[in-house]
Length: 86
Image (cartoon, rainbow, N blue to C red):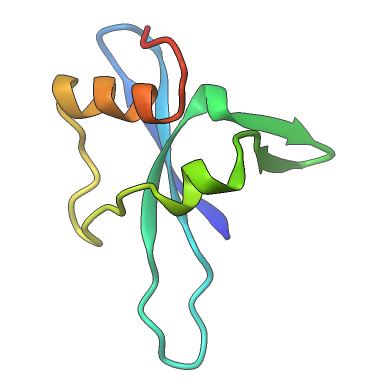
């Protein structure tokens, strides 16, 4: 997959999460996910999701046209990935 968008928390001045899109092919619909910035690890120009596979597989997808998370959704996202909300 690819990072489609980096979502900035303008009030805190930091990256809140990224919108990750799983690769689409052969007419299949793309799936979009919010992933906390802290769940990513840079690796030679790429990013690796550094959580166990089950956490990502159980993640709830985003609507293709609605990527903004409110405070409650953002808190739940960080808890899902077992990260401390900022």
